[in-house]
Image 1 (tube, helix red, strand yellow):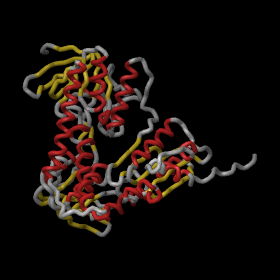
Image 2: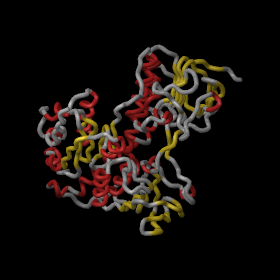
Image 3: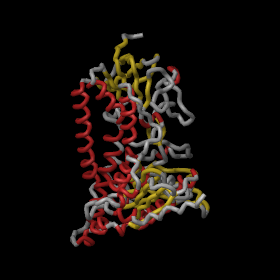
Image 4: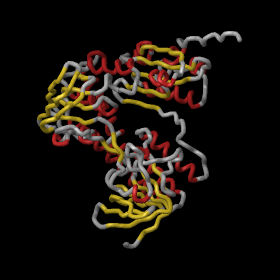
Length: 469
């Protein structure tokens, strides 16, 4: 075996959890190295979270321009310069990558560009991007391998060379007609953006509603909004075959409730879920076991089945959000310093950055009913939130679930402008174990979105009277 280089801390993958752990350990004086094969800083600043929101904002600017008359603003004809959209996004990405490079240098951590594969316990061989190989071992090893777009096994799909979110966010042309496979977070966010840029868009979803994990009324509000913007949505539809080449012409043969149907478009966007990057790097050979879905098996402290090896983020089966990966980093970091932090019963917020946003924290009605949790419900249209009225964006509603016997908040959901900021206020109260009445009786600035919570919570039904023994 070639010479082995030794580090105290070895991190594989520079995503949200990996990079933060790398910086923290290096700053604490540990000899630390991180191996990254492609995206410095992970997917969030390069190809996912931040780039997608950048492009979505450009689409919103297009929407404002087309609706200027509603705000008393007269504009001429509006068109989309996709090269301009792409350049705006690239500038943001380049700035973010430089920030990460500077941070690695400032902390003293070594950034190794290449692809790692385990050759012995806690030891990897790195095939360097610039050529050559290095063999590296760590006293403690941390895996932040991430995930990638899943490609279903459908006849003709791979041959059609569909876009994933990566290629969709790098478009320098405006597709004529995009067919989107999948009505989840990625598919819906990009479908709306592309429609606002001027593409014809068809969304195909196999479930009976888009955003299948959400309550029916939430999904229906999203659907109605999409329909109002001219997006075709096919529900309860299963793709049987794909033909053609994305970027030129594609044909989808699908089974719908009305029978077989052929959908034609120019481009195909695949948004049917994620799969972990856990294959082909020798995990099983060094005692790092995977679960039935291919994710790394971890306990509540994110320890794997191999001694002194941890896994974080998507590859560990954590909810696939950057903010969860950051919390994974905090769990591991604190426990390395004799803490006792776990992932058990974390309160994870969700936000889909469609326009308007869908934001949720805690239980929704579907989950509460499944678990047999009784609740009191208050619901209010966004038209009753004066901030929404002033912005001229009153689509959607918000609702909150309150425990039947106590005033504990069980969950909150909103489809509405600035909904994520409203959710953050509710989440803070939930984390603090505060009764909903604290928010109800609070003085919020007028007119803000958070002020709407006061009026929503004023409508919470009273607790049921307890029968005497």
